[in-house]
Amino acid sequence: MANLVTSTFNGNLTGATHILDGQSDMSEWYKLYHCADAPDASPAYSAGFLHVRTPIPTKIADGMGWNPYILEVTGYHTYSGEYFHNFKAIVNTNGDNDAFYGSQVKIDRGNASSQPYVYESTNTYGGKKRLCFSVGKMGCCCVGWLWVRWWTNAGKRTDFAWATTGGASRTNAYF
Amino acid sequence: MANLQTTTITGVLTVTGNMVQGTNSDISPWYKLSIPSGAEQYVHVRTPFPADASAGIGWNPTLLEIQGYHGSFSDNMYDIFAVVNVTGDGNNTWYGSQIMRNDGSAGVSPFVYRSGSTYGGYTRVCFSVAKMTQSRTGYLWVRWWNSSNFWNSFAWAIANSSSSTGVY
Image 1 (cartoon, one colour):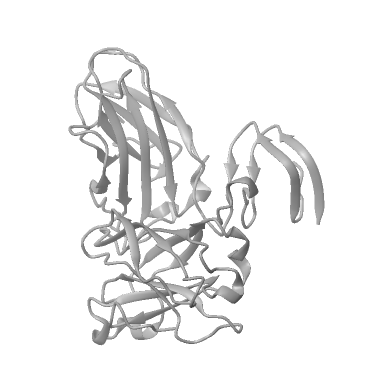
Image 2: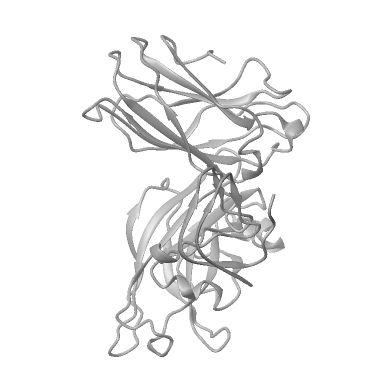
């Protein structure tokens, strides 16, 4: 890995995978496909939900107690943006008793179908519970994308793998 | 052109041109345009983004994002998201002006359309927004989410018009 000091690039700079701004302490926007898995095409998921598991841990032991951050999500599902997502949520864990603070969606500029919901995973992944959320989707495996980033704690961006799955419920923890 | 592997810059990074975020994000760089002086009611922008299925964007919508203002008191403020799409089944139909979010000033009337002519072999995604009819300072910033590889596929253009449609 190269280490440079203060540098000026005369021209364009392209990151093959990503460019991080350390001073801002924001993770890069991470792009996810909105068609999660084959069962998404099932009528059981008509007007269902896409659930996303992020790499961010949620427990005090992982440094997250009394250390809130902003989760930001933008995206759409299907060709006319029938589901348009554009929200910010405050995520926090109680530093006394390790309790998850719940779905604190503070700004929601998506359309009425978006219905964002933020939760803590039921299971552990890599030995830790992870931050998850759900948004509405069409009952088809139609094209759509989500972009996700968080503000503060950007260092958790590679703590574990991302995952998505479809679900018939908005609030059940699918992870 | 230099090719670096994973690199850490300890200090400040300055890029004189554009900074493309990469495949993890797939978001084009913000592009800044100055709104021309003139008494016309609308300003039109032609983006480099192609609007033809033959360019590989059929059935693969893009989010077009627009920020900006016009006027010394931000009389017109722009804050817009639109979903841009063309059908991919051979008929190459434009999906129309699908404004998903319009949090700017009342009356900015965003309208997204496909150019009537081709530029560099493709029709291009264009849009118009209402402006002040007095000559004032104003800027627009434009980017899109998905298919960011088209960020420099053709030249940008900007022009005023008395109509919200049909400039390009």
